Image (cartoon, rainbow, N blue to C red):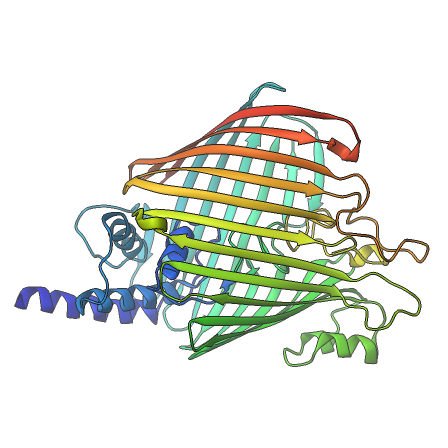
Length: 503
């Protein structure tokens, strides 16, 4: 017993030390996010709605989980304990001698400076009955390091290879395609941080909102952009603000700020505002994290694209979490001349261990945007990223909605399986076409002839050893009115396979 207590004390000190060292982001596609969402639904954790999480935040969470286990206030299942231990190893905190996470092949640390690197290799193949099989290879290189207590840097470079479909197409400064190859930089930033304040310069990922399958204001649907960012964490308050560049050629700029509050009763509330605008240079007023963008537009500028969102999440600690988000692209408080409301909505829930089924998760989420959401009268001010194609907000787009239902079960700590259903609908609205004065301002949700796709899939994930992950999915779908053409439809089916290797 004494040896166990000493080990726990030493481990807690290691947790505390790591929490004050590593300020890097955990990538949005990291395997730990579904696990952390499950811990939150179970009432084990309380995390902000904005992502990505920084590594110190998750480290402090693991420390809290460890204390709760010590006090007997909670008991993790076998699968939950496995992922708790694996994530602890991922953060370089040794919980178990069994190797659960990949070791760093390239690393140097002399106590004054450090640098490390990871290599990830993936191969995916899709077999679809309406066309030939498609294969895609992926290689990602992640390098990071820094000076302890002063600054850290992190960068990921990705190269994807597939059958050549076009010779050359330059989409943005962060994405280049050539002869079936695609090079991109997912993130590349420097960060200096203290206990509650971090300053970041460079390209980051952003996900503002509690959504599980998508979020309405800022998501990972579009390529990252370069920006200066300030983030403040103080007790139950989180504040974040940034200003950045979408395109120097088109003189497109973006700014955003967000306030997150953790309220009593396991309620988190978020209020966010972003603006996209064209100018000869970044507007100093949009660099100020405290000034409201909408007021600045009225006072100093004209016809920028300002969007707001409000989100809420309730986690009563009974294995259930519920959330919602409201997007306000344009709210018409005057109707002279008449103009449409441009609103988006998102509702979701997560039930961990439903009906007593251990190591099972049930997730349901619906998101919908009215016609004209993300559009703008000025073509350059559309709510799209640096590539001018992909939306910065929810991937479903304007004049559309999507329903996702997924149930997943962990049969073994390294073996997951599940089934899912998705319903996706699109009206005739398109993000490239903004509202004109001769359009109908009272267009109903899902305008005109709308397309609909119903899709059912079964999936399997297996991790035979810690550095290899295998994924397989079989799906069936029916598409009605494709391309908004009435009276048409067809069935489709497919098999997707993926192998990922971490070095």
